[in-house]
Length: 250
Image 1: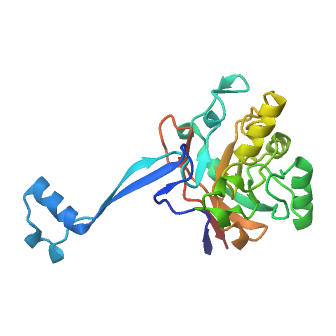
Image 2: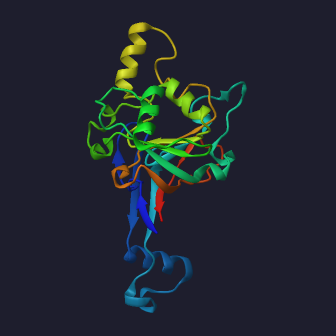
């Protein structure tokens, strides 16, 4: 089997105020000192005088790297019921057959409609089935780590999200900052028209589904014929969680 890593590396990065990551690194010399303080064992009794290396993540947003969103991220209630947090999600959602919808022909700000999704499926000759994990390839992972990363990509409409959900899809992902189109474009339209349902339209479409955001390496996958494992960390009450997303190709 081949394993394709679809996750970005967790590292010091500051993309936006809501997804800043900071890590403090402790080396083996510091580890030796900690061991002596904790147990009285001096560095001379350790191999090469070294103790454990330990990293302390001082800041890690649940949405600060490749991550899975829970319905609670979108709203406190979904269809009149309390929205599920990430620790309440069914595990079988996060290991299933994957399919890639190629949207690399779209320019920044262009969105995937239900019609566009259907056309992409027709091009590859694939029919969706319940629990398929749909991954939208925009090519925006090439900008990850750059200052303008958030401004790139198209995203999906609420209509497309509903359509995928109606086909039985419960997990859908994208290789851009978010599932919706870039925030500055949403904000401009919402403020100009002064009406709800424009900003964050796909997130807040009142569906209990999961998104995967900040994917990478979708260009290394076939259109279908692979499994996706995207188990999120079990964070109590979390609106989402980092995940090591991996494609498995037999």
